[in-house]
Length: 530
Ligand code: MSP
Image (cartoon, rainbow, N blue to C red; front, side, top):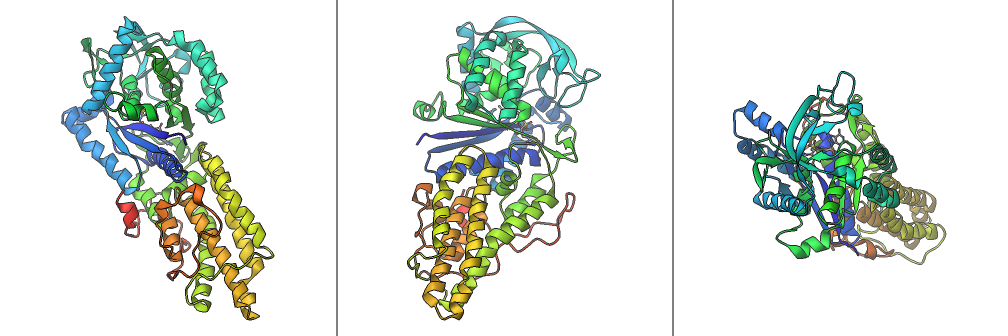
């Protein structure tokens, strides 16, 4: 199986994280965990983007040096991902020596190959985006389309990258390789952007002091966006671990928000092409979560603190699930009440209840031990067929970022299992004194739950583990692989563990702004050790 490399954007350290950043990281975590389950060698990278004027300004306002500022903020990002149980393999900071070395190396290579040269660049510049805009991209009153703040006309002598020369190349690539840029809406956006014409790009800044110096002209610093994109090759060891680099490049999947699509799907591949390196395999640009219809942004200050909001849900159910279940990829409005509603409908009713209905019968009538499975009869066949289909169906969706459809496949399977227990009615078999048949039905239902728990690990890591522990299965959940998911894997005779109902319904929908503390739940050792 091909190695799988997934990245999040590296986040700016001009302030603390909000729930929109958590959205991308949780989604990347889901696919990383899924690919590990599917047996791939996975490398999952996240990190922080620490150079540029915005950070310089923030540090000045706080009365500290830029280095002190980034050293203060970066650990807060690391702590958040730890708190959310994110399974990243590395965390890169662009102020690390390994990255500075790499950025200078690639920039030098571009210069040596005659790819970049000195010239004068003029244009409308948004200091918050650290990017130039063309006249027709601006909103009314010459404001930036992202921040809605006035842009500045800026002229500078710096190094230019002739992006326009790669226009035909990138157009053909996006046209011919649909998988390179997904989803379709974002692909179409970029196709029309490229067809509209690409302008050359200033790839260094004379005015920015807090940046990586251009190696052959230290009065200039490397444009923060170009430098930031290079993090993706720094971390997999382009300079210091060639074997790892060859394994994971170009197997890279850049998961990003659509706000930074053109940097990833146009500028980055063109720059790589110019210096003779392959493009990443895929850019996947998801939509934006809004709060009351407005984009969340640090600069605008209407952001929701993910530590307050998401971790409550993470403790209860799995924040990855919250992200994945709701039309993943499209724009959406953040609503805590809607998440709670789905929690009750999907988790409490369909998943938790199935276990809550079955285990007490096993406890009462089979001494708490998993009964024997017996020969299939009646509705058993339909359940077995559904169980055989669901791993592949889920893999085809979740393995390609279609989390929402993948979860729907798993829930369809849970629906079959719920219907099965209703129809097969083990309680009737018990009444007529047919204990072996009642036992077989309970076995089949618990086996369906075992399979669901494995498939849901990437999305509901904590909840799946609880189901696994209730079933009393001695082999660790973390050691399960998709290819080994086969009917009959649940050992008969093992001791199940009774306990309070899983996923009790959340009766009071917590709304945004309600700051009741999360119920403290210890993380299972498997989670805590990550
Ligand atoms: N530092 C750059 C990225 C450089 S990557 C080489 C940057 N950082 S950022 O801190 O502003 O993060 C932007 C990313 O955060 C978005 O692309 C998206 O992944 C995520 N999101 C920020 N706000 C979001 C929402 N409101 N909704 C969904 N995702 C959001 O840009």
